[in-house]
Every structure is written in C-alpha cells, then in structure tokens.
Image 1 (cartoon, rainbow, N blue to C red):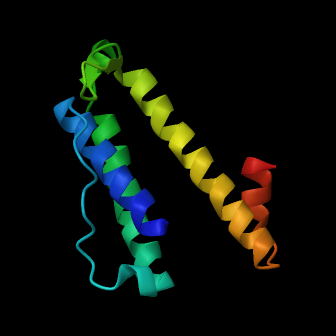
Image 2: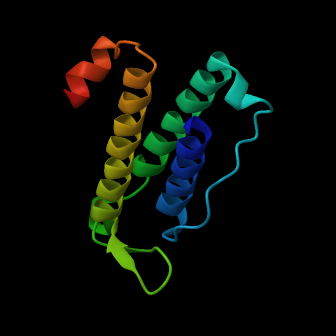
Length: 114
C-alpha cells in the first residue's frame, strides 16, 4: 500500500513536469516495503520532488491541461486536486488497517483527517 502510493506520487511528479500522466514510477529503493526508515526517506524525497515540480509551474500555466490518457485532460490545478483526493483515499485505507490492528492513529493523522 505504501509502495503503491509512492509510485503514484512519482507519476504525478513526472506529470507536473511533462503535462502527461504516465504509469506509476517504480521505486528505486530495494526492500522499501520492509523498512519504515526506507519508506520515510523515500517519502521525504518524493515530497521534495513534488514541491520542486510545482514551484516550476508558472501562474499562467495552472489552467494548462495535463493529459491523463484516454482522451482525459484536466487543468493542472484540478490534476493536483485529484492527487490530493488520492491521498485522502490512502489515509482512509490506513485508518481501516490501524483500526483492524487495534492501533491508535497518530495525532497528526487525527488533526488532518479527523
């Protein structure tokens, strides 16, 4: 689940640079799914890449379409919103797993998701 989200974020990062959404970008960290430290460092790197990609988009391009395939194009700002929705879905999945495992949700999680 964590690998899937990271690879999806990689595809979104690439799309903000190319204006085309391609397949998920495979993780280049061996064994990432078996190490919380590796996942954390990968996510930090992905977040830095995402912020860098978004900073390069000039204001006049926020309405520029991103080709999502199958004749589906969305303006950059809506495309980013779709990625945010993917994050919300991911956090919902994590919430279900934590509840099933009898573990509490982190405080930051509670503040953001509720």
